[in-house]
Amino acid sequence: MNLACAKQFFESHNDFVLAAHRSPDGDTLGSCLALSRALQSLGKHAIVACVDAVPKYLRFLSGSDTVVSSVSKIPEAAVYIDCGDHSRADALEPFLEQCAFRFCIDHHGTNPKNTKDGDWVEEVGATGELIYRLLTKMQIPIDREIAVCLFTAIATDTGNFSYSNTTSDTFRIAGELLQYGIDLPELNRILFRTVPLNKGKLIAYTLENVTLAEENSVGIVCLNRDTLARFSAEESDCEGLIDYVRDLAPVEIACTLRESSDGKIRGSLRSKWGADVSEIATQFGGGGHSRAAGFTLCVPMEKAKELVLCKMVEAVRKWKASLQS
Image 1: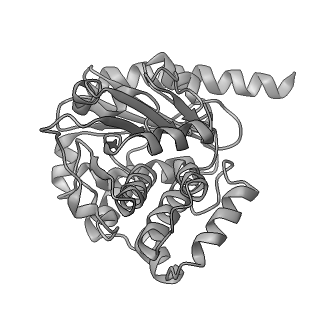
Image 2 (image 1 turned 180 degrees about the vertical axis):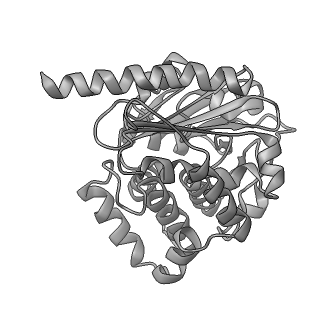
């Protein structure tokens, strides 16, 4: 599947639900909201759905107040946006699978590509890049609100254009989006230069409680519900905490384990130089990219830490061995 197939899918239907993944980030929400606004400009009906609430730091995005957590009426077509697999839509999945037509737009290399009517999957910097190309192909006018949503999608998923998934195309698209009147300094402040006091304390807790192993080349930290409550933090406040662990000088593989409100353990993995963390994630039923991946476990926190730390050590040893060969 490719851009032409995606264009045909959206031109062929008129009633859509665009599904963002659980624990939504800037890419899934920015991409969904941009595409929703674009489809509505064509006179089509499109809603954005996500099982989790829009994080506070993303509520400035146009249309964020219209995101729903459930679907009461089964629409004609469902689209998984930035979902590495259908389960990332969580409780929405059973409803989405009842739609007559289903499609997926994603940029995760571990995507199984098993959506009924096709999957457009390319390992680009962000799904927002694909949405931009789609709107351009469909000749849908881009306004400032759509541009802000797409720029947010791309900037957040590339670490403000600093990760290895950033390409010349990423910069080209971002540059073209700036032409639509984005206030770059203000957007940068909102996304990357504003830290609520309670999150600042959570960052300090993360660094004070990281467990290092394998000559400090792996680092893992556990965040249970009691910890979040202690700092009056929401689950969305955990976004970006893993970067502080990864950025410690000796660490190659970093992991945060977060106890969700449903009792499940959500794991995030990052690597710095070359270890493939998607291999770890897939062993726990998750997926993602070689440098950034995630998974979910239904075991107690201490057991999760034991299981994941073991695989992290194996992965970093494998990576170190590859450097010697």
